[in-house]
Image 1 (cartoon, chains in turn red, brown):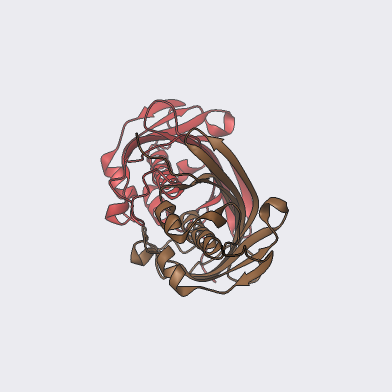
Image 2 (image 1 turned 90 degrees about the horizontal axis):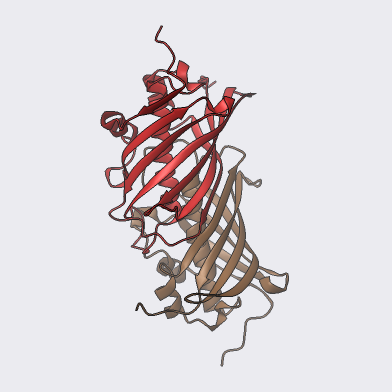
Length: 184
Length: 184
């Protein structure tokens, strides 16, 4: 059995994994260009797994140019970076309870079994949103039993900026179905 | 001068206005099919202007099918319905402080001058999200002076469902630049 990952580690950008993570997205909606994942302890023990990514949005995928980074793009970029964070954590066995999954299990679950249950975003300063950075910290992890098996609740904080200071920030809670149930 | 709208009124779906509201969206991202706006008093006096719309999303505009109505779609649908609510309120002079605008002013301001400042959404029950209803209530209105002129802060609550009971809900605060400033 592969040993678990060390408690603290930094994982450089994994271009092949990123390409696979973004495969479900239409080509003009792939905004995440590179990402680094770091791990300091375990989220359930007060530590955190974080990701920092570089994004590029040459033009909106759904509307004429609004002139600003908007809340739909905030959400799309969050999804891409958190998918990468989770995929990399599976690959490196870096985060409980996903360290028992294989990457093939992750790809099967990526779209149907990872759901946002609470989402909030706050915009305080203007940001053009063509080229920028984003960060996600996993700040909490709970597991609970639901009607259709075990669910992991992943609490995150996130932020985006073009300069050092973030222009906007938010918090997102994900529900991840840990056990696949067969349709009746 | 046209008299102000009565304090309570219902405005049926305005297909021509809806088509104009959705013009900035790419054709496959136009999800709002019809909408009714109602007005009971003025939001600043404890009353509310509300909109209820019918939506259709034959397929996601940005990702392979996830099997569920997701938070990006929640946001896109909110934007389309709130744009319609505001445009109809301008046309009918139904909501302070937008009753002084012309529709031409609204079209010029729709993308650059109406910004989400706080967004939150919560998903409690599964929803397929192919055909569903959505509602927005304007529950607060404040005006304040900013660095580049007057800003209206519009507080809203919203919800979506396929059956009578909503499957998800949220709250969004918009900042609307009331006075256009010329770039220096």
